[in-house]
Length: 160
Image 1 (cartoon, rainbow, N blue to C red):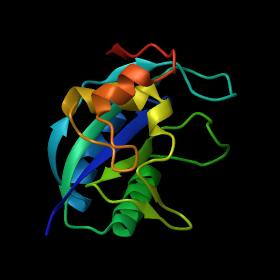
Image 2 (image 1 turned 90 degrees about the horizontal axis):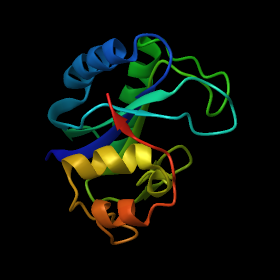
Image 3 (image 1 turned 60 degrees about the vertical axis):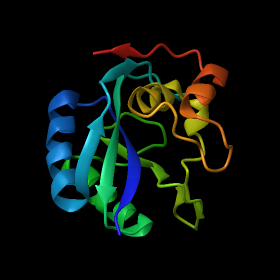
C-alpha cells in the first residue's frame, strides 16, 4: 500500500535550484511518485549562524517505503548532493526532512514524524499550505492554513 508523505527541501550552498532539480530526479527513482511541488521560496536562514538565505520547497510524494526506509533514502540523496554535516543549522547544499508520513505519528531514537518544529517555521508552513491547505496535523488537529495563521515566525517567504 502506498503512503502520501510530505517532504521539505532546503539549501543555501551552491546552485540550489539545480540541486533541487537533481534531487527531484533522485527522489523519483528512490522514493516514489512526486504528485505535487510547491513554488520555490527564498527565506532568511534559521538559527544562530550568519549565512546566505535559503531556498525552500515542499513536495508531496507517493511512496511504498516505510518511514525509516524513506529517511535512509533522504540521507543518501543529501550525501549525493554534497551535504556535509558540520554544524547544526549551518549552511548546506541540501536538507531533506520528512514533514508528514500520511497521518502517522512516529517517535523513535532517530525519527520524529510529524517534524517536531514544522509549526514554528513559515518556510515549511507557507509551501505546505500552498499545496495542501486543508491537511490536518495529526498531533495538533489543525489544518496547515490554521497553523500558518497562528505561526509567530516573522520570516518573510518570497517566491523565487
